[in-house]
Length: 412
Image (cartoon, rainbow, N blue to C red; front, side, top):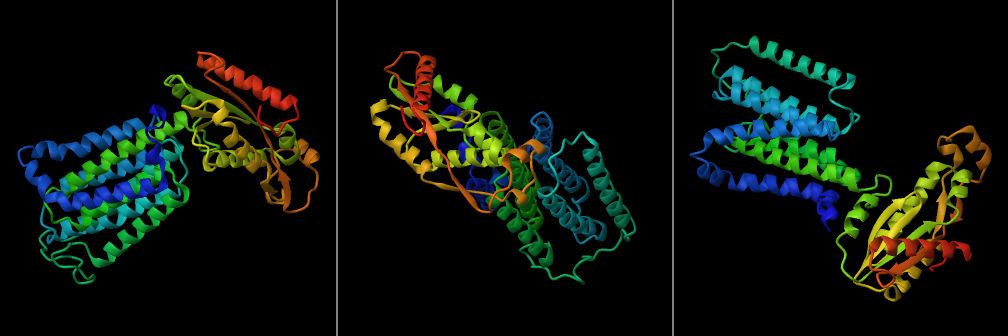
């Protein structure tokens, strides 16, 4: 269970719901937080600088550049708020700075959904920083040419505002809401950690901008956002270390960690896809990857009440805790039959790029919508075989080899 402690945070619905709930909670208890921190105002003002800088430093070695860029944009926005937006918004320069921040920050955050994942300290990073610098220069020149002694809201002539609820014009509130909804749909569709980072920043920057009249709202909202970014970063780093990127299930490192914490009674099953090399040669490696994903989905969806891992290549490991092998055979047979009875549709060879000329020769021409049957062989052993886990794994592997020798598509 130690290796899977972050699994709940990788769920798409959780990645959407947790920031939303915390944003609503921050809005609800803002006054209580201000009252409780009244004697530590300096700490409250300093926390976003510390936490966002920490996120940026950790993102580089963990190869999470989009999260790092999100943190950088939030840090820059917080600095502008503290240095340039502490005067009344009725002053023209302050009001214009506020409007520019409310437009540019959400748009720069949202476009992170669509840029490639590249290191910040690279050619891509330099180009991105250059574009960001041009935006800042343009904003500075625009603000510089506004009359400093003007004391009317520069946007009230053109935009409808919501009175005491928010100083932000309604059209910009609707823009923030639309961007947040679009960001949420992207999380639910592809469930990536960097998408959640963007969603977090959009939510809490939106909360800050819409409730800008509230005292210390930027410090509180940006502190909560940076804490969520740190949690996101730890979850993504755990995923990189322990989750197999192809199948989405825990990998061998996670299995080896879990095997160190077993009780006296358990069963291990080794599962191997039959004739996988020949299948790869005939249909291509991309279709082979589809087969592995399909088997992984069967392992997750069939009610076998066990932990599953990708051991390596086309092999998977199934761990039954607290059960003897005699109690697991029926579930494994059900799994084997379900895979064997599933008609897998092969994508048309013309609809995807071929791996190489040799692969094209071996695969030849095939009918569209061709279906194939996938079978698996399974070897089973339990802790009665040997007191050492490594030896139980070897016995299960020998049983798998036996299933292969006896004709495949069976449990041994």
